[in-house]
Every structure is written in structure tokens, then in C-alpha cells.
Length: 172
Image 1 (cartoon, helix red, strand yellow):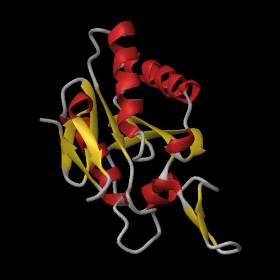
Image 2 (cartoon, helix red, strand yellow; image 1 turned 90 degrees about the horizontal axis):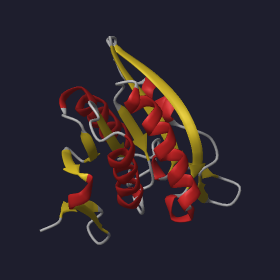
Image 3 (cartoon, rainbow, N blue to C red; image 1 turned 90 degrees about the vertical axis):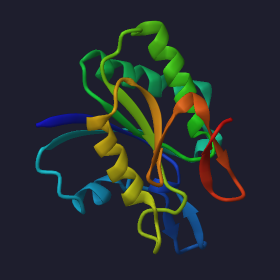
């Protein structure tokens, strides 16, 4: 059985349509719904909701909370997947990478960040694809901190979001 910690923080992957005002909001977690659609008979996924907010309003305290929970699992040898909003996912990933380097310089498992450009439940959403790819990558990658998105895996230090194309790209 492959154990993986899935830490949720909100972001577009967790947004829901609020029909009363026509907005998209982080109202209730969606990851359990995503997981219920997957066949993962050899996966033991521990889901922990850390927060449910848009990444544009994340604070340094929020990033510290993420890093502290990642450290707990990585110290136990458990790979981690963090769902996160795309606007500041790289910032949070770099924060976590720095915390891991300081606290666990010889980590043995990967940490993957992922999210979605379109909310789960909206036609054409990339949420399920990105989550599935991150979970698979947690089995295959060496230790390090990565972003798994749209069929690619990027080391967190070498990636940025291209807001015009809604894609992540490698830094030169």
C-alpha cells in the first residue's frame, strides 16, 4: 500500500459556483469528491484540510502552517501532495522547500504541489487530471519539491506561471 498525505489549502481546485451571486468561492472542500472518482486500490491517502482560501490572500503564517504539516509527514517518510491556488503556488512551494532544506536536509520522499486553472465540477476542469498526476508522481519521483501540472512535473525552483497562457513554464 502506498501511503501519501494530501494537504488541501483551497484555490481554484476547491472553488464552487455560488448561485446566489454568480461568483466562484472557496465554500466547501472538493477533494473528497475528486478522490471518489478515482480508482486507487493500492493508495492509502490521508487527507488533511489546512485551509480553504484563494491563494492571493495567503499569508506567511499560512505558508508556515503548510510547511509545518509537510515536515511532519516527510519526517515520517510519507510523500506529500499539496493542493493550492495557482497564483501563489510557486511562492508557497519555495517556502516549503526552504523549510525542508533547513529542517530535513536528507529527506527521502517527494513533495508535490498541484491545483487547477478551472474549478473541479466545471466542464473542462483540469483538477482531476492534475490531482491524479500528482498522486502518481508521488510514487515515482525522487525526494524534492515539485509542481505537477498539465502532464508535466517541474522542480519548484525552476517554474513560473504564465498568466497569459494559463500554463506553468520552466525558467530559463
